[in-house]
Length: 252
Image (cartoon, rainbow, N blue to C red):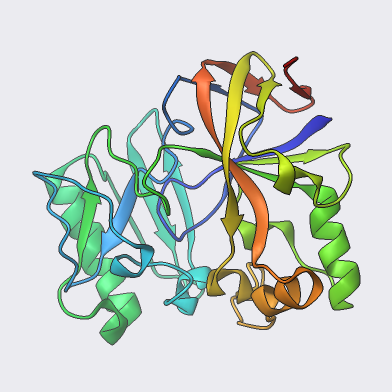
C-alpha cells in the first residue's frame, strides 16, 4: 500500500492543508492538526482545564455549512493564521497570542452571525487537540473505499469530504474496516489502528462548493448497514511520513 496524500487541519472545521511530509511523535496527532478551534458562545470549554468536548460545541461543518466558504492558511514559522471569505474579507493574526485569538474570534463571529450562539472564543491550548475523539489519533482513508462509495452513489464523492490525515492506495475497498488492533509501518513511523470512523453530517458538505449536496451517511448505511468510512490510528513509534511512503502491516 502507498501513501498518496497527507493533510493537516490546523483550525477545526476549516481548510485542509496539503503536506509533502511530516514527522509524528508517539501518542500525538500530526503537528498543528486541530490545534485551533472556535468555541461556540455557549460551549463549556475551559482553556485553564482543557477537556474533550463534542464537535457541536465548536465551529464545525456538521452544524456550520458556511464554514466551508472560508479558506484558511496557518504558517507555523511566523505563527500567523489567515482566513479569507469568498467576498474578499479576511483576517490575519497570530492564534498563539491572546490578542490575535480575540481578533480571529471577532472576525469569525461577524461571518457566522447567530450560528455562534453568543460570543464565541477562539482557542489554542498547547498540547491540547480539538479532535472529534478523545484520543490523539491520525485518520486514514482508503482511496478505493471513496471510489467505491462514488460508484454506489452514482456521483463523485470528493475525498476531502472526509477530512482525513492520510489517504492511501493499494488495498481492497473497505478492507481497512477490519484493521482494528493491527499495527502498520507508515514511512518511518509505526501506527496501531484503534477504531473505525463513523461519519456524520459534515460529509454532506461539498468542500468545493460549500453546499450541502449529498447524503453520504445515508449512502454508506444503505450499502453496508453502518456509517463507517476510514479508521483512526494512534502513533506508537514516531518518525517521518511522506508522500509515496509504504503503509504496510507489521508481522504478528
